Image (cartoon, rainbow, N blue to C red; front, side, top):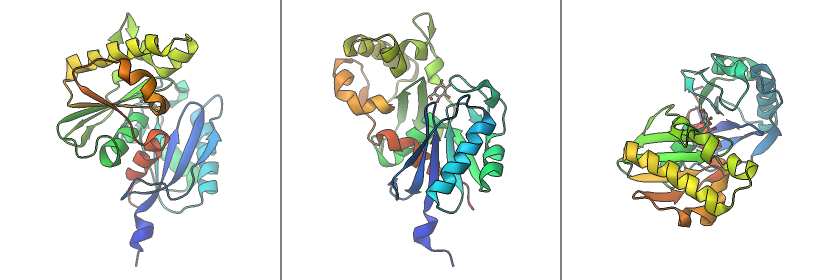
Amino acid sequence: MADSTTDRVTVGIDIGGSGIKGAPVDTATGDLTQERIRLVTPHPATPSAVADTVAELVRQIDHPGPLGVTLPAVVQHGVARTAANIDAGWVDADAAGLLSEATGRAVAVINDADAAGVAEVRFGAGRDVAGVVVMVTFGTGIGSAVFVDGRLVPNTELGHLHLHGGDAEDYAAASVREEEELSWKDWAHRVERYLQLLERLLWPDLIIVGGGVSKRAEKFLPLIETRTRVVPAEMHNDAGIAGAALFAPPD
Ligand code: BGC
C-alpha cells in the first residue's frame, strides 16, 4: 500500500534563463523536503540541451515519482507555444513528452508564473483571498498569473501588455532596472505605471509582486501608489518549484 507521506511529496523543477532548480516538495504544506539543487541553464537553451540538464538534475535530486516542471513560456497541454526569453526551438515543442523521455518520469509542464502564483495562492501571500488575485513576477521578463476565487486562468501573459510604446516587460522587468542602471525610485515609477495598467484592466482585489526582486520589496513597494492592495510574494525563490510540484501528474 502506498505510504501517504511519500505520496504527497513530489518533485518540482523550475526552468529559468540562468538556472534550472528543483527539489522534492511536500504538496500539503509547500515546504521543500530537501535543499534545492541548481544547475546552470545550458546555452543555447535548446529543448534537447535543457532536457539533458533536467535529467541530470532529477538524478541528483534522487526522489522517485512524477515531475512538475515550469517553463517561461505559454504551455498548452504540455506543448510550449511561445519563447519570449528562451530559445526559439521551444515554440510548438512537446515539452512534456521531451522531458518525460529524457527523465523516464511522468511529467506535467506549466508556465513559470502560473506555478509561482499557484504556490502563493495556496501557501503564501494570496492564501484565503477571495475574488480576483493577480500575481506578477519581475525577472528577466514579466510573468503573470490570474486567479478567481483561488482558481487559475492559465497563460495570461500580461507582461506583454502594451506600455510606454512597447512590450511592458521591456520597460518594467527587473532585468531592465539592472541593464539601464535605474535607481529604485525610477524603476518603482515604471512598476507603478504597469500595476496601474493592470488595475485599470482587471480591477483585482489583490496584486502579489513576485520574482527574485520581491526579496527587496522594501526598496520599491513603498514608492508605489495604486488603489489595489499590493503585497510582496512570501515564497520568493521557492514559489516556482513548489507550484510546479503541485502539477505533477499522478504516477
Ligand atoms: C513569457 C512568460 C513568462 C514570463 C516570466 C515572459 O516573457 O512570455 O511566459 O511567464 O516571461 O518568465
